[in-house]
Length: 118
Image (cartoon, rainbow, N blue to C red; front, side, top):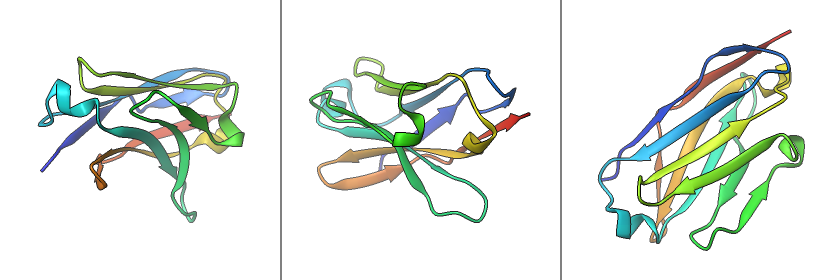
């Protein structure tokens, strides 16, 4: 059973930046190369939504609302996926969840709170 450890959430002023990290603790560096990795977020009273994803082939997709501001990357040697968030807006406030899909099995992080203040 994979465990994902997230970090980087914080309170930040609008226009600021944050970097989220999510490390897989049990999958090997070789095994993680087979994984698709993604970030989702869930704001209060809203459904969880996809923010960005990076496939095992490094194909990247972003939600329209974050294009040009967020960057997703992965480091397979460190078994970690990152989300660099720039030009943050109050509407980016949410709990951000890491998702790792390995052989059609989904694993989720515990969530990290991002709050963007005016």
